[in-house]
Length: 202
Image 1 (cartoon, rainbow, N blue to C red):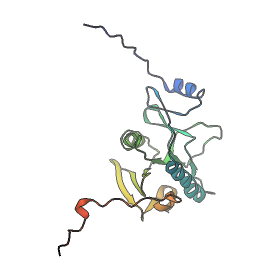
Image 2: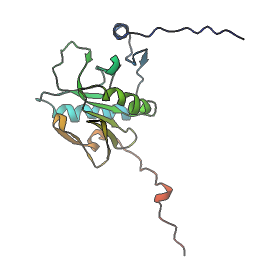
Image 3: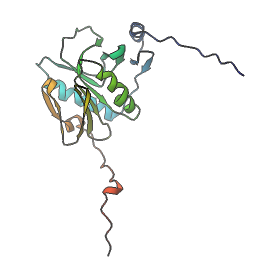
Image 4: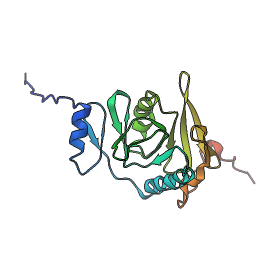
């Protein structure tokens, strides 16, 4: 019988992670145990992020709430650190701050490699973050979104399609969903077999 020597890595503390990440060239998220590197995205992902900043940031000018992009990290439940694709904060944030603690709305642009974590892991973390009222997950390959809204017993889910508007009463905005996809063209989605009309006979 072979004896296996497994190296047990001591979990990082939040303070250790923040100090360590400060010395890195890349951005890292933190799940309470170890860091994970943030990978690069697609042109579609970057376009949607840019449209978010223009559509929301522009409408919030002169108002108490402010939009921030993915360069700023947030501290969520259980001392986890995330870099959402966008967020709105309505409390005062110090100009030298590197971590935000109380986002009101968070945006994530879904991709095949992150969708499961965004829909499940982060949804749980964000639900346990008291300041957060609305979590918006934007599709990348079509116009559409899943919106989780804080309810008394957890999240209430909304599904938005291309001709819907994203209503955000927490920050006083309602924006057509298609505006976040400006500059992108999508191929028509294939018709499911059950939706096809029956063949005609001569």
